[in-house]
Length: 389
Image 1 (tube, one colour):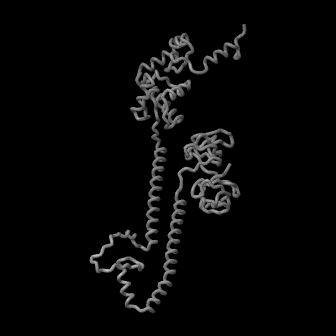
Image 2: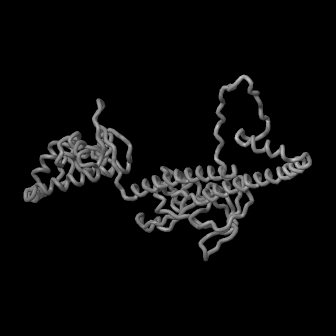
Image 3: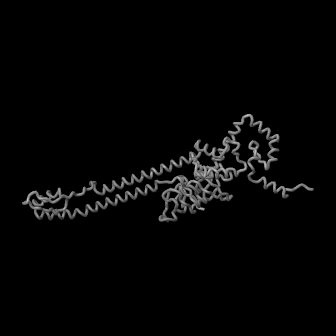
């Protein structure tokens, strides 16, 4: 009878059995070998290679266990950080996903006997936030990456700067209002008193002249001394002066409004975001961590996650990668091609590349969308726009 081939039923059955997870009781962590049944595990324990591993482990068993514990902890935390981020998730869900890898370090070879004990240890050491619920233990990864902390500090600084700008704008508007009033303090509300006569013989008089009550006596006495011709002359002078004062106030109001508009325009131009990724643009991979296959290669941003992370589809190979914006740079096309403005006052505006200034590392764009369509803008930096796919 001939030897069974690769496609024989027995060979296919053996490959099916070997595929996927097997029973933990038949796994040897020292040799990293998975046996399919009890007989195979017994034969492995009697083998010479297994006996040599036991002799090596008996020399310093604590060191071996510490190495396995450290590897298990690193892989588990890396899975939480990469797969779930800072989301709150049940520890069993993470563990079930961790053991899907056949080459994972088994917990029975570490210093922790149960998953609950390992979860409590993560909370005690400050790697995760842990809390117990009726449904089980939940964990939440604490991200202490310096890059993430730097981004959070920049966001807090930006929020504080926006609040300072709002307070500065409010003070500026108050100053303009005070200047529009000519530096006069707001008039106090008049105080109304009861009409009383000190004696029965005193006559009640009403002063209907314009102006405050305190200044009523002065003009009345002066008007008695002046003749009718002088009163006419004074009235004509007042009528001539009135238009000039109103025009001056109007000019003051217009100048204050112009100053406010200029300040708002400068504020818009000065505010720049620390993220520039946008779906549909062409970018270039600048990191060398992915190897020479992707270094200096171009791709198209298909999706933006959390403002700083992009799902990129490479143009040459068609592979999809998840990259941070610090590992990417913009692509400058030839003049006449369509680009997208990624930062500054014209953010998210499509434009045509008119010319490139290589000495100043900037370009001149002609806006092709929005209210400013047709406007020509100079001095747009290379990192503030990119080619459209």
